[in-house]
Image 1 (tube, rainbow, N blue to C red):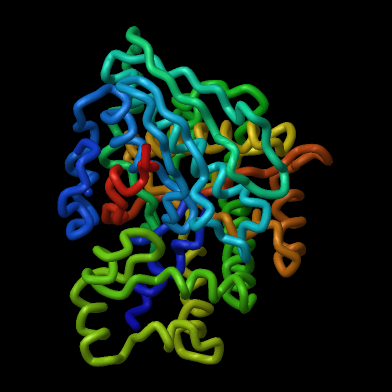
Image 2 (cartoon, rainbow, N blue to C red; image 1 turned 180 degrees about the horizontal axis):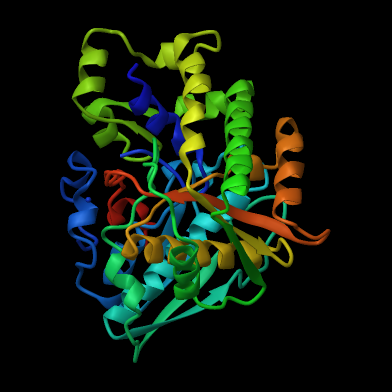
Length: 379
């Protein structure tokens, strides 16, 4: 496989994740997995319009773990889809919860731009720290009176950018301005650096953690199982890791790439991933987010904060990629997990919820998405 394209594929294992667009009428949306990007914000009611934007939120492995029950024109209940979990790399579903927090924050921003205020009652029936169960994640209700947030103007252009970043340095002031644009969120604190020595050290940790994930059989296979080869597979299952474009179409037709090959623990795809982890050395700055605790509420707040950070970075012309590997809580990652906590000066009760590299890069493609109708539970 071409080196840069394969990195963009395997890089999608980051938290809030993936390489590569209405209302609530499903129609033939599944034949065009990018349609929701073009039609974001359309719909008959305020809640549908806001949810149509929320679909574009970043989320781990592009699993899109949200399900909603609609209750009229201005209210809905959010649930975690039990079929979208990542047991190998996200055993406590912390990253899935962060993705749900990003979903609700983007819904809030979209609603405000539509003149609506979003009120959120998180985990109204309680929650379990070990896993997300069938209880509601949030009760969502709209009321007139929203005021548009300037960050929302970047929602359609927001991307996760993988691959090699350019050598252009990131100015410390630019990164500080991006963080300032996020605003204060209770219980969370940001850290960042563009210092050359610190960036080199953190790039190296990111590479080691990426290699550790690839070298851990269960973690590697979790990603391999979610790879969609070519446009037909992406259209049929517009989530997971999209292997998109003419290169992969020809590889598939010539039988040079297959699901069996991707799952082969001794195969060339896995080895290529190990080699291509080195592209993470191209980060030009780093930003991280630490919470005072690790409750489900802390996690959804971290998701909201990261979504806002990604929007602010987009407005500033900065590329951004979450580096979730070292923050994952499975046993094989324990060494890198400890290193990250030390690097980010996390106290005993604190949790490093997000870590991302920043820099400058070519514009990234939109990730495929399921249409809203597929995420709405039957009445």
